[in-house]
Image 1 (cartoon, rainbow, N blue to C red):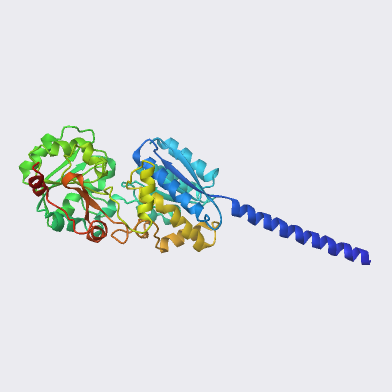
Image 2: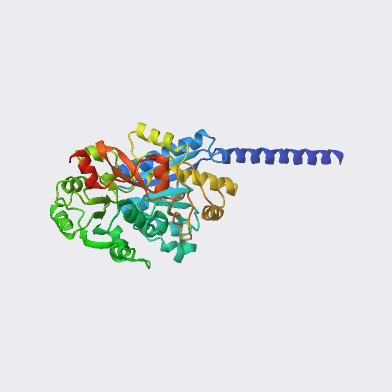
Length: 426
């Protein structure tokens, strides 16, 4: 009888030891299991290259600092070559096979396709989607169908956000440039629908300027395939406009600026949206004809935090430029890291969503915070709307917003193009 009791106690002890051993082994396995982050981008484009490189740098820094709760972070990158079937196939693979916790998707079309697929996959495979470089995407779907699309966040700015008072767009034209009469030109493509026609209860960009006291003296839509801009610029000059605002994304801004500098409108200040014009190298690309041109999102180092300059230096060492989605792809993994740590792990994605919804996050750049539509809040100290101007000898000067100007190049300010031309003899 006594021997049976001893045997039972020995078996129980062995069983408990086994459970402890297996639990410890499971914990070790979990600690070693990587947290995967996906990227679906077009890697033959400067935008895609910048996104991929930014993520690689960010993830390496996180791993060098011990990972996320002791777990390494791993990047899964897929080139969708601007083809939606490839984007959707990559997304499905990342969710089902790679078990990515967070996926970055580039572009309006890519986001639309993957968000719809993600909504179907989320119930059995909870995950997060960050949309970047997708100005035309309809974020109303998060507000209108929250339960279906709550996993989707939009750190990269959408077209609707450019109406935000926080970016002080009207103040820039009225007070910094001194605009009285505006020539407004807009690319006739999908992502500019809001600006052309108004949407989501917002006015068209033409109406927006006029309601804010700036006369639109000339207005037209432009074809992204256009190469001969002189006829348009002649009409701009004849309109009496003192400022050109050309909302571009795919227009050949090199050809445009070269022709502007030789046209009857050469003394009319020009503000451009996006494209090659945002690069510091644009000066050389135009042979110095970019004098006075002012692009949005300029390749100017703004020291938001102590980490900004080191990160941009790493990018430049790799021959990569800073583009609009560079900021979110660098800071995004750090947002995830903070959310996971606050949640105590990765198992409850619903909890991660609530933490990101209610939190403020800052690492390399401005403060990231999200509104009820999961759009990033606008207006420094949140996501700003920086503008830079090419001045004498190609010096690229930040000219808006004022707080960042003081931080970046104090004492320097916007100069009207006619004054720059007089100064340089152009």
